[in-house]
Every structure is written in C-alpha cells, then in structure tokens.
Length: 125
Image (cartoon, rainbow, N blue to C red; front, side, top):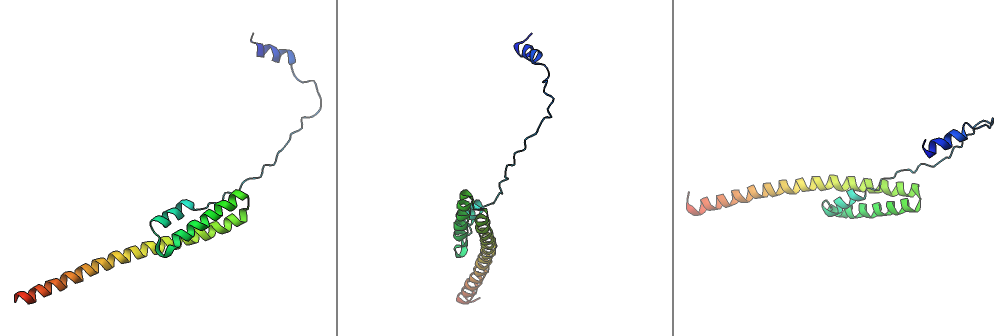
C-alpha cells in the first residue's frame, strides 16, 4: 500500500455535519484596449502622406501609456483617435500612391508622343 493511500484510508470521510460553504472571489476583468501601435508604425514608415502616420503613432503611444497607468477611458479615447488617423492615412496613402502612378504613366505617354512628333518634324516625314 502506498503512503498516500494509507493516509486517505486513515482520515476517512469528514465527520463535520456543517454545510460546506463556497467562497466566490470577484476578479475584475481587464478591458482590452487596442492601441493600434503596429498599424501606426506601418503608416509612419510607408504611408506617411501629410504626416498622419506619425501623428497616429503619437496617439497610439499615448493610448499605451494611459493603459499602463490604468486609465481605461483615456486609453480608449487616444486609441479611437489613433484608429481614425490610421484609416485616413491608409486611404489617403493608397489613393495618392495610385494617383502618382497614374500621373507618371500619363506623363510618360505624353512625353513619348511629344518626342515622336518632334522626331517626325525634324526628319521630314
């Protein structure tokens, strides 16, 4: 017989007729506040038209600081502002990048046509 089995056999069932009381511990749940710091860093490095990515990064850092201090409402406020700035930076970045690509394409075609016309005039065609 193992030692543990012997101890359980000797102790037996508790002889106390009192009802078993349950203890409940209330643990407050932490509200998860996304600070959007990775998104802001991406926008700061790659889509930084009008410096919106940098401003969003600053608000993300402020949101993280407020979260570390325990100010959930302040963290949510800064995170909301950072999210709005990130959306604006991303949309403007995509639209302006597409616009620049289109303008470069149109400019390339226009310059090609001008050079072609110039060459035809100078050769006498």
